[in-house]
Length: 268
Image (cartoon, rainbow, N blue to C red; front, side):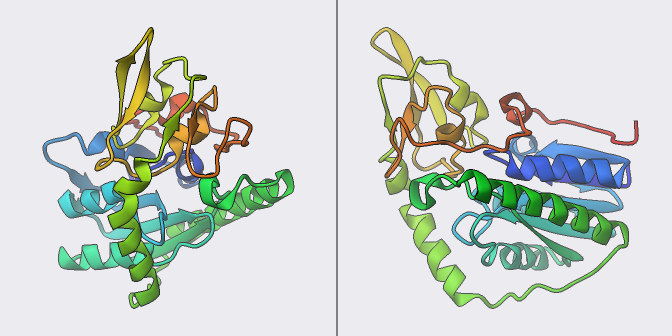
C-alpha cells in the first residue's frame, strides 16, 4: 500500500473525509485510531502515512496525541489533516511538536472545514449553513488529495499562545463538563452511544427496567458522538433539549464508526 490513513471521528466528519481521501488516492488502507490504540504495540509503516482528526478547543483529541506518542512511524512522507467547525487553532502545531520530539518531521499539514458539531455551545447549523460547509469540506478534501499525491510539503506556525491557553483550560475542565451530561427518560437503553464512543467512555448500567449510559468523566473526549447520534435525542448537555436538532455527517452511517480496524483498498 502506498498510503495508510489513520483517523479519529465522532460524528462522521473526519471519517467522511478520510474515506473520500482514500478513494481519491487509491491503493490506500483506512484505519480507525480508536481500534489501533488497543494494540500492545503500534507500528505505522508505509511510504505515505496520513493522520486525520478533528480539532477540539483548538487542539487534537487526547487519543490522537497519545497515538502519535506511542506509534513507531516509518514513512517517507507524513501528513496530518485536521477537520474543524469554527477553527483548527493550534491542533496541527501540536502534532508537529509531538513528531519533532520523536525526531520526525511533518511533511504536509492539511485543513478541512466541516459542519460545526458542538451544538451545546454553537447551536445546530441551519440547512443553508450545513450545505455550505459540506460543499467546503468536499472541495477541501479533494485539494488535500491533490497536494498529497503531488508530495507537497508545507510549514506550520507553531507559536500559538492564545490557542494553548484555550486548549489547556478545556483539557482541565473537560471532566467537569462531562458531569453535566443528562440522560432523559426517552432513553431506551439501545446502547448505540456506547458502541459509537471512540474513547470507550460510556458504560451501559442497569437502571430500573433498562440500562442507561454512564459517562466516564476522565476518559471522555467530548467528541459529541453520543449527543448527536442518539436516535431518541435522550442525551442532553448545556443548552440542548429534546427538541434541539442534532448533527452527524449525512453520508455516514453509525455502523461506519463502530470501533473496527478497517482495511480498505480503493483500487479494488
